[in-house]
Every structure is written in C-alpha cells, then in structure tokens.
Amino acid sequence: MKKRLGPTDRLYPMPCPIVVAGTLEEPRCMAVAWIGIASATPPSVAMAIRDSRNTLEVILERGEFTVNIPSTSHAA
Image (cartoon, rainbow, N blue to C red):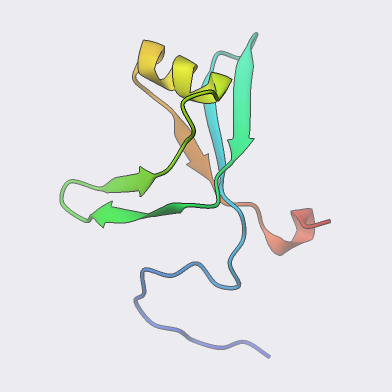
C-alpha cells in the first residue's frame, strides 16, 4: 500500500545514506547515520563524521562529495 507523506524533512523508512568522495580510481564510501537537511536555500545537508574516517579526509581535501539514498531493493 502506497502512502503519501507530503513534504517532509524525514527519510522514511529511514534508509542509511551512503556518502561517497574521492575519484573513480580511489573512491571512499561510508554509511552516515547522523544526517539531515540544513537548509533549502542554498540546498545543504548537515552530517556527523568522526575525525578518524578516511572519507572525511578526502572530503576536506577535494571539497566535494555525494549523498546517495539506497532504495529498499538494496537493503540486506
């Protein structure tokens, strides 16, 4: 049964976003549990990443990353 939720800042049913940084040759990927919408204008997200994560190092070096929301078909 499909349910319309309308505009919301919640991900339902709470998939775990995957943050990807780096290059095609050396990608860095990580699941991020603490993430949310920070602003609509300009579009931005806020997320918590531990200092020791390699992905954070690459994000700070390159200044860019993507946030990917897997579909339910990708769930284990």
